[in-house]
Length: 188
Image (cartoon, rainbow, N blue to C red):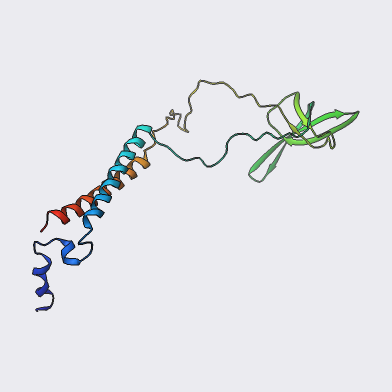
């Protein structure tokens, strides 16, 4: 019975942990000061993040990249429209027709909701290569968004996870540093 019970009084004496283990017995105060300083810095940054609200890093470029294509603007007419049902999907297309140097070009494109004439831009070398340059006019409505039951959707404020993480990490760092300093200076 003398195995573990022989060492228990030694573990729970008034000496500090640094002296017992030999770990950082000379420089434990420096580690405690460094941890406290980093904890205070982290708490200060947490306060700044709290004032900013939430933030995120956006790593993608959302600005349009405009390239010179040398395409020529023209006007085309929407001749007809068709709807094709493929299993569970419905494909709507429109036939766009335009004339260049007396030759008529036509092509089926996805139906974008245009009627009559539409502005296009075509490649002068290969006029069959074109794209629709018109923009679909969005409907201006003051009706709020609603869900399936007709209830108005409201945007819930997002929680500031960065603030919570920085605050928690700052408290932990400061607490560890204070514990190191207390153990080094006050427990003898």
